[in-house]
Image (cartoon, rainbow, N blue to C red):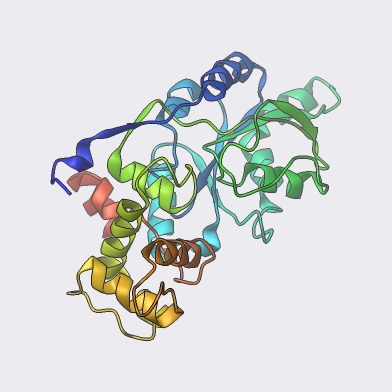
Length: 301
């Protein structure tokens, strides 16, 4: 791959995402608090910068979902980073329910001044209005179902499953507006790879061999032990990409006629292993690569 390719931009912005962003902007003023959901493995790549721009001073809780899949040390540094920017943050796992019970408590703390004013006026507390925002396939529907204690929204691993807004009454005093996942119109190739690896964009948006090549190169550099725990200690950091594919293909029996490797099948094996957490807790947005030197020194020391 050309060394300048990492600066190329990807355009994947279906029409419903453009319409959804306009709806988000129009409804934002009605909200008491906003939940922004990001993938804990990619807190930068899964954070839509256009959403951050429109939040202004709206009370916001950033929820780092899929915390059980992320490198905990890296995740903790990203939590501190966004807290330094003034956001309230909470790491959760919507699928397992980890820390989901803390969301209401966190929201009450964030809205305590508003609650105190209502109490002072003798006003009965109404359900607070909120919306959950995030990119596709980050776990919004799973979270809403967990919060509402029922199957109120469709859930799946296909990016863009939720196509229109819908109100959901939660069991803990919130009326929640569920919005479809929205990306931003253009993003850099490295971000595109992270989104593709974690399943936030469809696998056919980028060449599958490039996606897996990026994944293997990253894992060899930062998580070689994870690779070897899964693939019988047969991967070395000096292996070429095709050698890694051949090794995994032979281990998993991904063969065509004779001993020829079925590379398409190997690509799917590797991506499935990653997405199902068989490669261990991995973070793809490494914070020391994303922060400026001044802040890096502040947060790492």
